Amino acid sequence: MDINNLIIKNIDNPHELERMYRKDPKAFKRSFSYAWEQIPDSQVLGVWYERLHFKESANTEKSSLFQKGFLFMGILAILAGISTRIIFHFVEQGAIAPINLAFGIIPFIAAYFVYNNTPKKSIIYSLAALFLISGIYLNMLPLNDKDSIILAYLHLPIFLWVLVGLAFTGNEYSKGSTRLAYIKFNLEYCILYASMAVSGMVLAALTMQLFSFVGLNIEDFYFSNIVLFGAAALAIVATYLVSLNLKLAKNITPYIAKIFSPLVLLTLLVYLITVIWVGKNPFLDRNFLIVFNGILLGVLVVTIFSITESDSDEKKNISDYLNFALIVLALIVDSVALSAIVFRLSSYGITPNRLAVLGVNILIWANLIWIMLPYMRFLRNNSGPSSIQDAVTKYLPVYGLWAAFVTFAFPIIFK
Image (cartoon, rainbow, N blue to C red):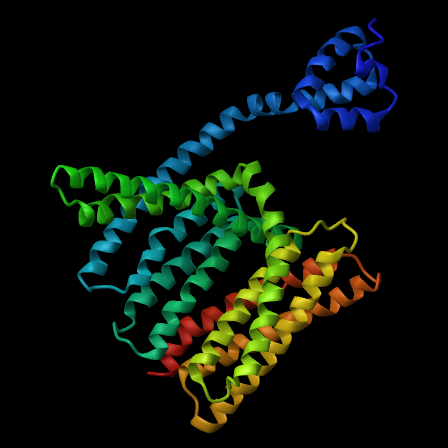
């Protein structure tokens, strides 16, 4: 036995073994192979052996499952591309609203999750019925630019997003941990899809440039047939890849959350100080009020993702204090926005837009309060971070209900 082998030498020092592995994994594996041959009965080395070789055996065992899922994903991707292209044809003719393009992608993402999670039949029937009713109702609406119709178009994707969440959670739709996983999926999905979309755009630009060199302008054809089909199919491919637990997205998302949270807080503080300095008034300036609400939505999204990316077993750190400050600042912004909306309603009367904005602001205000209270308890060491994540996940269906109300009721109420 070679006592100069560093792994054998430090076999009773787990901290040093871990340090050696992290410093140079390849050198560690080379030394480990020799140590394992010398001491195959060591429990310590047995644990390391499983750690170093687990991925290979796991991938071998699951290869058939991945092939099955890959085939179904491929079928859904092709169907999504074809459906989107057909819908786009009718959009071009002016026969249907552009929002119908959502039905070329979102139902197929939901179908993939149903295939993966195999929920009970009542959930499958409910999803199918709600997608069908949404599509029929949407196309019964008149094709005009009335505020209530536009609001229905804007809120429909939110409602469909909640339906995809139901497909994702399956039989565990009431569990906070499963809802939390759906929020994390969305962030990882956006990162992966954006990365692939950028690559696709580079390829598209290169292709069109190459054809232009031979005197052919293929922009219209390429967009209508290749780009549109590819964008829809890519949405299903990204769903499949994220469901495989790719390390790329999972490793990036926590850093994005930690970086953006302080940046958004700083930006919002500077912006609010500037607003006060220049004397902008959301009570009188309609466009400024719209921007104000856009900022509020952005802050809410960043806050939620920052919370969901924090470790439920992790003790509080500087990020938690930054998130709490962001929530308090967002509450101040929302309170000002709510006051401005109530003022405009009382001064200028009720309109679909004002009522919709009022509803969203009330929902966000209540959500922020619900998140802030357990955050205060957590920072005082009276509860764990899981209570904060529960406050986020339990509120998600409320947004879906409001989106459904605006989508289905506003066109009827405000004819």
